[in-house]
Amino acid sequence: MFRSVLMLSVTLVSAPLVRSYDEQAAQVGKSGYAVQYNSRLNLSSASEIGQRLHAAFAEGTAHPAGVDDCVQMLAKCGPSSQGNCNGGSPHLSDRDFQALKATLADCLILSELQQAIPATSSHVAELKWDEHVLPLLPPQFAIDVSAESLRKAEAAATRGLSWPDIDKSLTASAEGPDQIKVEGDGFRERLILWGRGDFNGDGMEDLLVQSLDTLTEGTYRNTRLFILTRKSAGGKLFIVRTLL
Image (cartoon, rainbow, N blue to C red; front, side, top):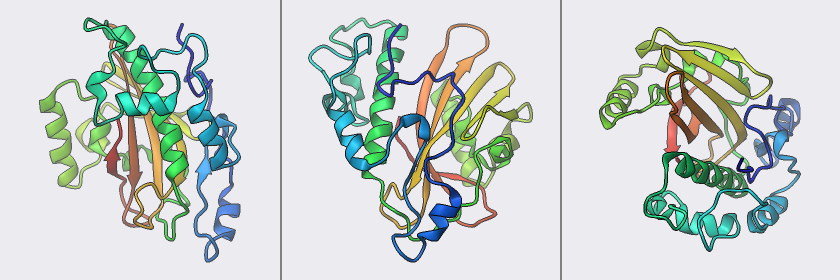
């Protein structure tokens, strides 16, 4: 079995983010809303992230030939060049491609957290990542098995709809702090909040969220990464950027 760059099992219950909301609030007016890391990462500073990005992959980690660490992985397989992420084989199986994609996701998480800066304002500071966040999630969190389904989700988001607005089968349950499980007709997703901070330099606090997607019938597996925020304290979340 391939090992994760983050050295974590995605089935583990997530631990809370490293800095508490009280600690974060105390920094407003000083350094802003401090960048927070999911404590499962065992990170204490951005410098540690840099070390991990440059560290050689552990044995068993899926990666393309000639790629030895996350820095090289991101250069070869980043969002702008993902087509090159074939492990050196033109006929890579879907299972092996998904293993490579999981490694890329781990590297992207670390890279985004390294580049995040404290936010100067926030509408998500009090938002807890638990089952109550479901009505706030955007329609694009639906599994996009086709280009048409993705277009429909984006159109629904433009109309101000949420994911539950377009899929009444959804239920959500917390699997510990910062991880929730969403289930619907024929699928299951685990949504992990990996960090909080300003990820795009606009001053607003954002959320870095990974979706682990599974169809209940068949072998479909996928992972996606999103940057989310919202425009008001009571508003719905929307996607600032899709990373993967």
